[in-house]
Image (cartoon, rainbow, N blue to C red; front, top):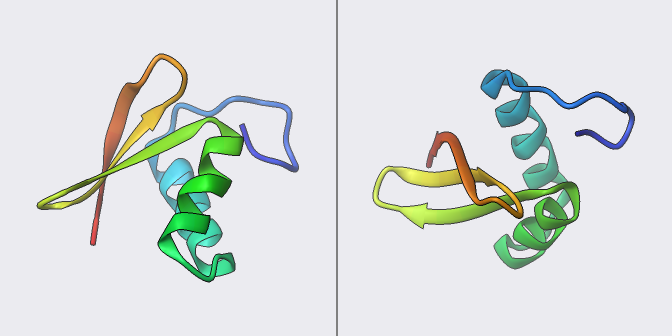
Length: 66
């Protein structure tokens, strides 16, 4: 779910764009992760980049390459 919308999206491209937009607004990786938790997303650093999961179920949605 996004701040300006009341609908939940399953389209990973939309989620990826949202997450990267939030990254641009953040001054640190820690703040970025904190902001995303507020929207119900969790990030986990892996070798290929970041694994994105929907919280609290921790369901993996995809990977964002670093």
